[in-house]
Structure formats: structure tokens, C-alpha cells
Image 1 (cartoon, helix red, strand yellow):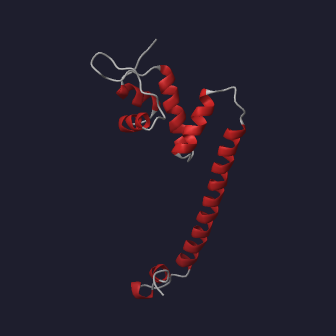
Image 2 (tube, one colour; image 1 turned 180 degrees about the horizontal axis):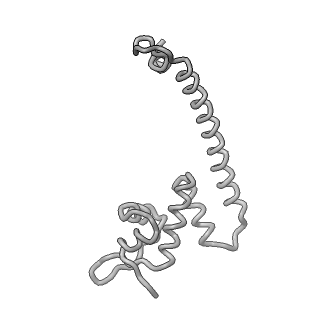
Image 3 (tube, rainbow, N blue to C red; image 1 turned 120 degrees about the vertical axis):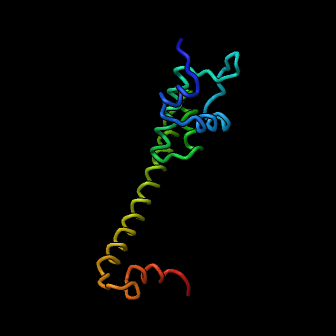
Length: 135
């Protein structure tokens, strides 16, 4: 069975060394065995777990959601309903964020389209941002 140092685990999984330590400290990654020199020793299963966590993070899942998904992954005979619920909630959050970004894009396009001043004193972009400040 191949074993990996923390640096090798980081390279293979795409997860930085401090992040691996953090995941271990919060329980997303079980504490790996240690070599005689007290260095962590990771196996292939740990690399797969790190890759799973990295991919889930890249999709925007929160740590508590990833923890729940890992629990489901570790117990594959369970119903998939909880995983579906978590994914649907993440999708709803993404859809809401897209709506917010579309509103922001429209507002910025309007501000840019209305900006015809050559001086900042008449700039609709600066003025538009200032409007949001104070009553």
C-alpha cells in the first residue's frame, strides 16, 4: 500500500498543506497515522477524500454540508435523500446568487451607459455609487 507525506498528499489532491491540517483539525479528514518521525502518513483513501472535499468546496458547498456529504459517502447504504436535499439547497443558493449578479450587471451597465462626463464631478458612475451612502 502506497503512502504519501503531507506535501505529496497536497500535490496529488490539489489541497494546500495548511488546509489539509485544518480539515484534520475540524474532523473532515480523519487523523492519519504518523511515521516514527511523527510525520503524517496518508493513504490513497485520504487522497480521494481530500479530492472530494476540494471538489465540493469548488462547487460552493459549506463545511457543514461537506461534512454531511462525507458522512453519507462513508455509509453508502443510506438513502440518497439527504444528499439530494443538500444539493438542491446549494443549487437554490447558486440561482439566488445568479439573480443578484444579473441585477448588479444591469445596474452597472446602466451606470456605464449614462456616463458621458469627461470629469469626475459629473460622472454618473461615481454619483451612482455615492447615492447609496447616506440619507
